[in-house]
Length: 139
Image (cartoon, rainbow, N blue to C red; front, side, top):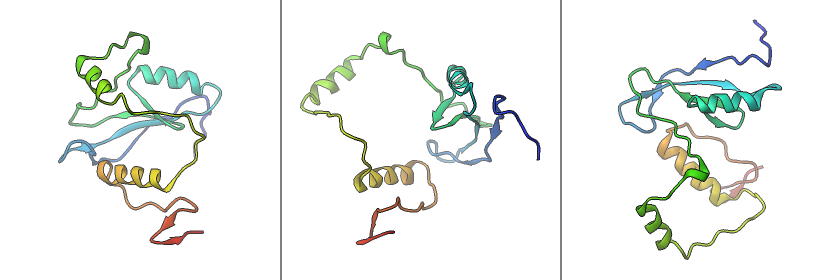
């Protein structure tokens, strides 16, 4: 097995799989693990090149026959909401947000599971430890 330095990123290409966004299309992604002393610097560089990050993995679409997915960076201080966005804010003025300690709940897991099932067509995943499943508690 070849050993690589943790400071030299290795890029990988996923196998084609059904696109979660466009029916009848296939997706592929190129990805790398963000590890080592220069992980933060590498993430910044890759983000400017259209990569997205999920935990310690940076990835971007690499579909062979499609270029529909485009990563977009929004510079917060330059952002100006459109009229439509302002209307939505006004309609939702009664919505209140609050800071809380991050504690996962069964409701959050259900919402996330529904999202995964609807958008990513992933196989069933094990329930999180302590989750209530069909009226019984998993151990």
